[in-house]
Length: 285
Image 1 (cartoon, one colour):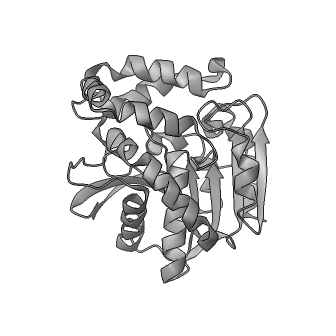
Image 2 (cartoon, rainbow, N blue to C red; image 1 turned 90 degrees about the vertical axis):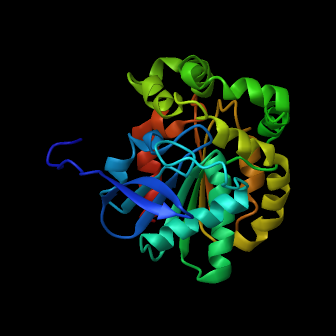
């Protein structure tokens, strides 16, 4: 925080969507900017961004049902489309009008699907910010999903809940371009919601339909081609291939790509000040 700036109050709130209690964080004022986390993340992922973004927008950072501290339910379908519809139902529930999306990784794919559905209905979406979104032109996640969705592997992973901190530590070091940038408390923050048994069920259900969802996403992209889009990637991303950024960019009529050199899959927390500047510049374009 620079001199003269006041602290931003971040409120924890709850809504009930499809019978599930859903947690979200809210801060700021003005037009709505909805932040959507990745596969093993939750609203915690945006802790370094919410205060800066809230000076320009009403920031709404969700814990999708099944993730973070939102309620878990084995009855929830977790395809891209089902998650997108659930997200739009949430926004209706809390009374959000026109809005902008910023989604990362799996959340980027859900944001694109939700954008297509929203534009078919009320055309409330103003712009898209996609942070290393999973997409049909990066096969990293598709290979991994085939492995992790195997019944034997899934059963083993479901028993990891109480020991998930060790797995998260390995994953974080891989997802950062420079592991020395991992801030104190990051591992604890990511691991906390997943220590209870069954904490990984949501992620495994997502992976079970991953490749089918990817084909549907590709066929959906023409519906959002006119939406202004900012694509943000780390040059050292090992989860979603940075080379797919240019292919995805060409699917939009008005888009730009921002590459963070020497950064991995999580630029919003690895280089948050640079990330926030780029995002605010796009929002205020």
